Amino acid sequence: MRRLLRWTWHAFLLALCVLTVVQFWFLVNIWYWADHDPESTAFMRSRLSIIRADEPGARLAQRWVPYARISPHLKQAVIAAEDANFMSHWGFDWEAMRRARERNVREGEIMAGASTISQQLAKNLFLPSTRAWWRKAQEAVITVMLEALLTKRRILEIYLNVVEWGDGVYGAEAAARYHYGVPAAALSAEQAARLAAMLPSPRSYNPRSDTLYLRERTADLLSHMHFARIP
Image (cartoon, rainbow, N blue to C red; front, side, top):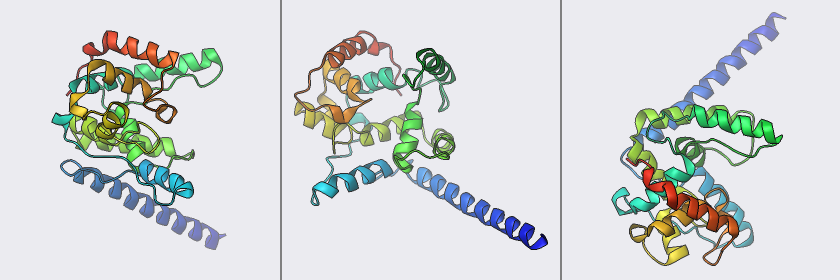
């Protein structure tokens, strides 16, 4: 019994050390990205491996552009679509989470989520796309780190440069050129709203896509995105 307790205690200490090292690795990476641009994300690498299973020579379309070279319309549209309270929360929008939970209970299934831009960035940067019991807890820890070490402007800048906007298309610059043939800086309000409307399911759309949902969601965002505060 004593041997079993000793082994259990040693295993616990080892697991705690490993967990501490992992968290420190996340922290160092985020600190580094305060003024260095990430070359890729865990999500991008995962998608590339899937794409290359069918196309061995495939490459992702992504080109980093600084914050100043991204249309203000796109910043407003994305915040309006994905995280209306981005400028006022500290990584978690508790009111949005409450509303989403109530709706899901009412509908009897998962109909709405409430992940903030910071939470989405946390999982895109570091976490696998597979579901696991520990994933949400780790996402929350990384979100706190992002909010503590990066400014809102930097969080949005990184997000807009790595978020998926089509199969193999990542970031505002690649999205603007893929869907409209223009640089991210030149996106109009309508183009920006349409791109933001694609975000919940970006691989469902190509430059010729024109669904009823896309038209209605674009019109809705155009009507109120100018109220969105951007950093």
